[in-house]
Structure formats: structure tokens, C-alpha cells
Image (cartoon, rainbow over all chains, first blue to last red; front, side, top):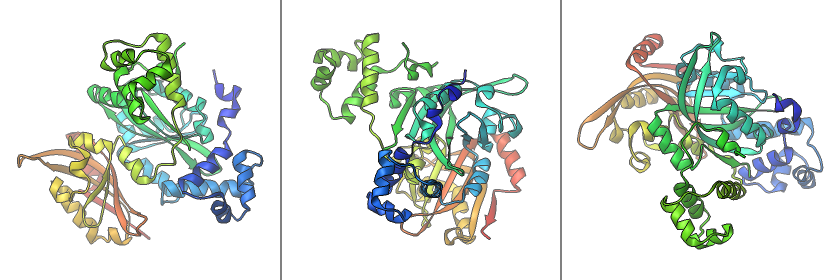
Length: 214
Length: 215
């Protein structure tokens, strides 16, 4: 069942895209990024063309650079705060493991932390969430090829006793560039009524709108 | 063959009139130009957009491919753009109390247009807890970097046009975020609470506000 195993390519970070994305997001020329990273412009050009792979030191620096674009906090502090967030937030890794669930999400799921964190979403959810995950994997989300996704979906959470909690959700999905050069899936959302869901869906024009990385 | 989008749905069918118009307007195409791209008549596009006809299955697949190819790359959204997109209730407020950026969730919960909130002062939009919270944060040095984070359980009182107010309960997290101009902004993220949740949270927090000071 796991395309994750059969197709590891969709989980390997695509450095040419990631480097170009961070560079253009900061409005930099190759030479300026090269200067920031202490390499030559030729080297940046080779990375972006896929002719060379950045060293471990550079890979870490690039991840840190992207992190500071999204948050002014250290990653650990950010995680602690995200857990306390009253709105619905989840961090899921590329294997589908739920690494973090916010207080608001626990409230929506009518459950406790131990029922969701550390579980694989394929076991914890039915409905649209597993499909959404598959779709993100296929589109290279965990490779760094996506900037944002906005969607509406049916969430069906199943606890350890097999008890289901269904609701409609409007959500925003972003890549989270965490330590050890891993890209995780950051979902922030709100549960919505059926009429609101229909409104959002009409505006989006489909159930999900994907904005690729530049 | 169903596309990936379709497999996600137990949702209503694609609303082709808005999808087509959205594509045309965002790509600055006339009906005739889109008709040419698809090899149909302009009259057919017009009928699809007015909802008098629905594209055939084959044409729907073709439209989806066309729209997918037309998706252009975008830069990483900055934190303000992300805040504006949030489905939950998120706000960015200045030291002076101006609501600079609000999320989609705020527009929904407040039932107000973006232009009626953004650029306005807190006291034009709220009465009660939201205003006292702003003053408390100022007192605690929030805008001077003295606060790491704050958590509050509030009665949000919205001022309505007719002089009435509408109340709801909210649980919110607040943190300082320094903007590009060097000034600290008040960023909040929150969710609406039911009355029983409100009472329980106030109890847990020991009041309206809990402030964690920076080291």
C-alpha cells in the first residue's frame, strides 16, 4: 500500500527547487545568496541546475534560512507554542506520522494528545486526510516543491477504541523545514459548517488549490 | 479516470462557472481566447460560465490539465500573507492598536469585510476584553520585548453598526513579532469557545490572561 516505499523519489529533498525558492523569496540574485553562504556564484548556479549537491553544512544553512523566513522563534520554542495553540495545528512527517497536535486540534477531535501524537495518519484518520497526504506526496510536497495549499475536507478521526469523530475543515498547508533537513507537513485549520465549506469551495474552484514553489 | 482532486471529494461537484471565470480573469483571457485554446465555440464557453451547460467528462479532464499547467510558481508567503490566509482567527496588531492584518477566520467569525477591519483601531471594532487586553500587554512591556508569550480567554465583544454588540468566547495565544520596520507587532492566533469550554479554560488559566515573560 505504501507508495512511500516504492517511490522514494517523492520524499527526497529536491535541492534545485528549494534553493531557487528561498533565493527568489528573498529577492536575491545568485551572487548575493552565494555571498551569504560563503560560496561562489558558480556553485549556486550548479546547485540550482542540479549539477551539484550542496554540502551538509550548506544544506543546514539553507534550512535555517527558510526557517527564519517563516518564524522568528527557535524551532523547539515554536513547537512548544504550536502545541498550546487554541486553533487547529498539526505537524506530520513524510511517513505520515503525526508529530504534533495543538490544543485546538485536540478540541476539534474531542480527544487527548496520546490518542493522536505518534500515530500514523493512515490509522488515525479516515475521510479526506489520508487522500490529501497521498496527493501532497505525489506533488512533491516533501521534496520542497510546494509553497502553499489551501483546501476544504472531511476529517474523520478514529481513536484507539474505533470511535469516529467527523467534521468539515478549512485548512492551509505549508512545508515546515525542521531540523536534520526534514520537510514536514504543517496543517493549520478551522472546523467549519457545511454552508461555510460550500462557500470556500466555490471560491477555491475545487477542493484544493496548490501553489507551487517558484 | 478520476484526477487526484476528484478522489479527495465527498464534496459537491466542481462549480464550473466560477472555475472557468476564475481561470479567465486570473489569466486575462477573453471567452473567445479560451474557446480557441480548447477548440470549442465562444458560445459554448458562455453557456458553461452561465451554468446553462456543463462541460463533458472528456472536456472536464482537459480543463483540469489546462488549469494545472497554468499554475505558476509563487514565492514563499511571508508571515503577513500566511496570517491573512489562516482559516483560524489570527490577527496582527500594532502598538497603537491598529488591526493591520486579519485572517479569513476572523472575517468569518466577525462576519465583516476585510476593509471594515484592517486599518481600523481596536476600539472601533471591539469593546470590553479585547481593549483591556491591549492595555495589559502594553503595561507588561509586550511591545518592548519583555513578553515571550501570553495566553488569554476572552469575551470578544464586537461593536455592530446599529450600536448593538455581539459577544462570543475565544481562547487565544499572543506573541510579539518584530516586523521589517523594527517595531514589535502583536500576533494572535485563536479559536472560538463554547460557554462550558470558556468556563473550564478560565478556571485552568486562573483568569483572563496568563503572561510568560522573556528571560
